[in-house]
Image 1 (cartoon, rainbow, N blue to C red):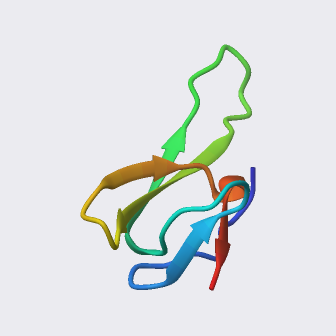
Image 2 (image 1 turned 180 degrees about the vertical axis):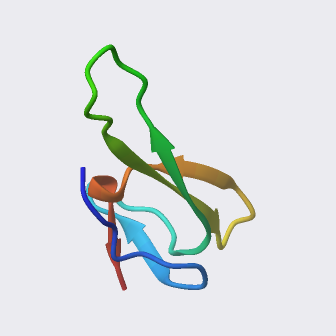
Length: 65
């Protein structure tokens, strides 16, 4: 994975399904550990939904509002 366009305080919703809108709280970068010299970086987007629920998503699962 490359970079992500999401940043804290962005308003987002899920790509599939209904539901409420939320605010990005944190963007976490995670590095995979492998035996190869090349390491892949993935991102986890932490979202606080308007209903008070806190969830983590991959950037592919969210769309900016």
